[in-house]
Every structure is written in structure tokens, then in C-alpha cells.
View 1 (cartoon, helix red, strand yellow):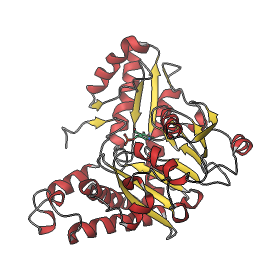
View 2: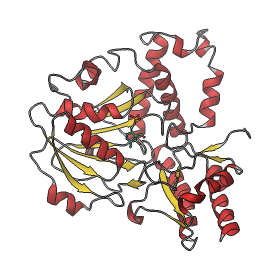
View 3: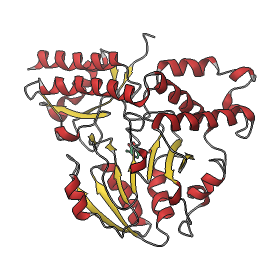
View 4: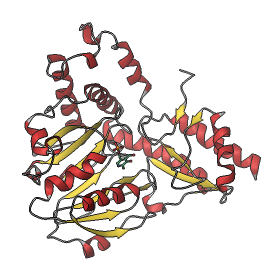
Length: 362
Ligand code: PLP
């Protein structure tokens, strides 16, 4: 569809056109029920099939074994900043955090506000810690080690799972389902939907079942993993439409060769941008170190800085490339979020715009 733009927003983000079309075709009459799925009971047979299939497909995609639960939680990923300490720290308030950017910092601050004894074992926004740095600091007595697998704002992504003798917890909000993961290395992996798999309002939590235990007494019911698990994610009304779309996205990823297939595509797209920057003789630059550059969110800048930021964005818009402004905490910068659903044509349009802008302005 020619009037669709290439949306480089960090989230809510682009969805595959095929999925929007499928949802549109079902909009007034889902599966011959005479109603939209969002108008139907979450306890009825139509939605029951959708949520069960979504869970089964997610298990197949990632390879989630039976000793892990899949929870469809209401609300954004930020709720997990509280849910994690509240659920895991009843008897032990010592927790460890790796800080590689805004989101892991925010999660650590939330744990602290809830009264945890927060130990930040690494702080840098341009690189991730080495295995040795983690090993030297990790405390076998802590309740968990928390990190953000892909810092959406700083564009820093882990290439290896941090090794620790305590449960490892990963916020994968901005790189969930973008590449294969070995779920058995994690205690908890969670991600909000609005970047890589659907509309905002849904967060998927994959949790090793032995970590579902008695939370701190004041933990609200809807943040209790035990309550979500016992009620099959339906203690209250779940975000049914978001779960329906997520289910379609899971099937779409399967059709692209599953996580290995999608990872290959993602790498190709990201390298087109990184290579353009590398070949620009310093006209464009990236803050993150090469070894941990994100395949999903690419913050970058050019030699002009804040003064002419809007100029490049207006130029890129003439090529249908939208929402390229960097996060407000990095004035004058740009950011290209290229989640699973960003078509390669979008990345081609962006790199051509970057090259043409450089030619016209140097
Ligand atoms: N974690 C990461 C890595 C994010 O990128 C975001 C949002 O951009 C969040 C957490 C917070 O998500 P939400 O807005 O759904 O609470």
C-alpha cells in the first residue's frame, strides 16, 4: 500500500501489513461470530482458542519447556519493574542490577523505592559488562540478577546471557522475538507488546515455575505471578484484542522461518544502517561500542548536531521515513527503530536518504 509510511518509532511501533489486513478482514465479523473479538467474552470459546493458540505458538517459537509458565499480563513492561522484586524478595531483599541505559536504571530505581537493597554491579551506557566483570561482582546470596537485554534508548544490546548462580532476569521489551534465545538460562524474561509483537497494554512474562512463590505481603493481586498462573492470566479481564494481534504476530514470525529466520533478516537490516554510517567518513556516528550495537534500535547523529536535526528529519520524510527523532534525553540525535516488522524497503529508503543528505551537505 503506497500511502503507508516507514515508521521508525521506538514504540508503539510498526506492525506487519499482512497482520493489519487480516485484523481488518475480521473486524466486523470475527470467524463468523457476527462480532469483533474485542466485543466478545474473554471466557468464551472464541477467545479461549485464541489465547491457548497464542501460548502454544510462543512456546514453539522460543522453545519454552513445561517447567516455565507463560503469563499474559495486563499493562506495560514498567509494571514488571515492581512485580519482580515484590514476587521474588519475600525472604531476601538483596538484588543486583546491571545498568546499561535508561530502562535498567529505571527498573533499579523502582526496586529501591519498594525497599529492596539494590546493588548496581555495572554502570555504562556505551557497552555491556564482560563475563569476567559479572563474575567478579555477582553475589550468590542475592535474590536475582537483573538486566535489560536491549536498551531501547542507548541502542546497547547484550550478545551473551549474563552467567550467574542466581536467577537471571531479562527485560526484552525491545528485542523479544528478534532472535533465538536459550530460555533455560533465564529465571524470567519479559517484554511489552508494543515494539515487536502487538498493541500496547500487554506484557508477556515467561517465568521458571519454581520462581512463582509467595510474594511480599503487600504485593497487589494482579502483580502476583502465582495469581496470574493459577488463573491462566485471567484473574481479571486480559487485554483481549492485544492478545489476538500478538497471536497473529507469532504465526507471522513462524512463516518467516521462526526466530533464526527473523534474526537473519534483522541483522541484514541493521548492518545496512551501520555500514552506511561506517562509510560516511564521520558524517554520521553511533554512540554504542561496536561489540554491543543493537540490531533493533540504532541511535545516531550527524556532524551538525541539534541545530539542524529537524532539517534531516524533514528530508527523510520526503522519502516516507518517519519518526526518526532521537530520544529527548539525547538532544539533536536520531534513532532508527527497526523491529521485526520494519520491511527491508524501509531501511533501503532510510540509508538512501542518509547518503543523499550527506552528498548534499558536506
Ligand atoms: N523496558 C524497555 C526496554 C522499554 O523500551 C520500555 C519502553 O519503551 C519499557 C521497558 C517500558 O515499557 P512500558 O511503556 O510498556 O511500561
